[in-house]
Length: 108
Image (cartoon, rainbow, N blue to C red; front, side, top):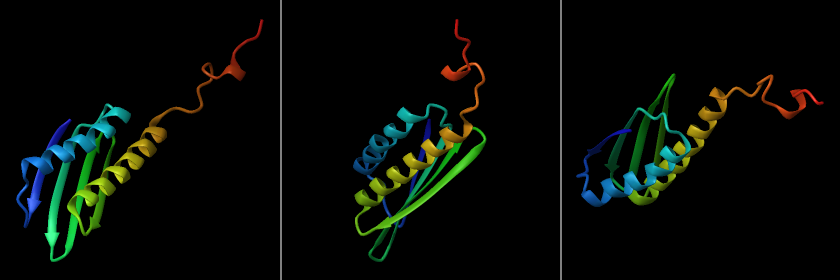
C-alpha cells in the first residue's frame, strides 16, 4: 500500500504520519488489495479536516472528515474508510456460489 500524506496550511509532523499509518493498518487488515492511499490534512481557522482517497481495484473510495482536533478527525476518517472498504469488499464477493453453500451440496 502506497501512502501519500500531504498537508494544506499544515506541516505534517512525524507524529501525525505515524498516527495515520497506525490507523490505516486496520484497513489493510480487512482488505489486502489496497493499491494507493492519498491523504490530505488541512486547517481552516478552527476546523481541522482530513480527506482520503483510497484506490482499490475497480473503484476509488473518497472520505472527508472535519473536527476541532486533527487526531479525532483522523479517527473519524479511519472509521469511515473502514466502513467503505468493508462495503466494497461485500460488493465484490460472490454471494451466489452454487456449490459453496451447504444447502446446495449433495446429500448422501
